Image (cartoon, rainbow, N blue to C red; front, side, top):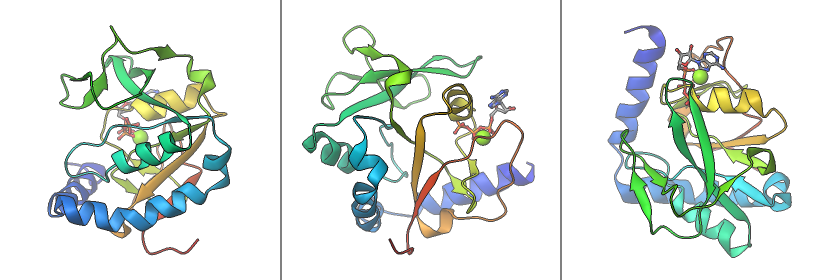
Length: 187
Ligand SMILES: Nc1ncnc2c1ncn2[C@@H]1O[C@H](COP(=O)(O)OP(=O)(O)OP(=O)(O)O)[C@@H](O)[C@H]1O
Ligand SMILES: [Mg+2]
């Protein structure tokens, strides 16, 4: 394993030691700060992922955004070789399908696909981040590819304190996240 893979694995292991209750309780103040961000308040369409086990839960965020009548869109991988994903409108947690990677995705036969240019803000998932917003993700290169193609989309990530790691190095294809909401920070 190289340094990046070792760091990814060690942070994933730390996430795995957290119970569902701890994941959600520690995320709660982050949700509040997220909802106060002007880019979120001004956004019409917000892209999120549907979190899986051992990840910062996104369901409470999606529900808060729905209550403000924001349009929520979630990705579906369409070509893993080209690292491509399309986005579909999420209107409930029903009718999702489990992808070959084990993540929940919209059902393309029933969900409405949107033009990615309509996304105002993307909530970017990640494993470890440095304070400049460079990131180690889950290893697929999907977000790097997507954000490179749509540079005008604002980006934001929420992270537990141990996910802030100055050892994260920027690689040429890495796209940085504009706004980090970090556990333990103020504001
Ligand atoms: N824009 C790109 N152009 C060419 N190759 C890319 C690009 N983005 C990612 N890759 C390739 O995809 C693979 C995974 O990239 P990386 O390790 O940065 O994924 P990640 O940031 O963890 O994933 P994600 O962006 O989905 O969160 C690497 O082999 C990388 O070279
Ligand atoms: Mg990357």
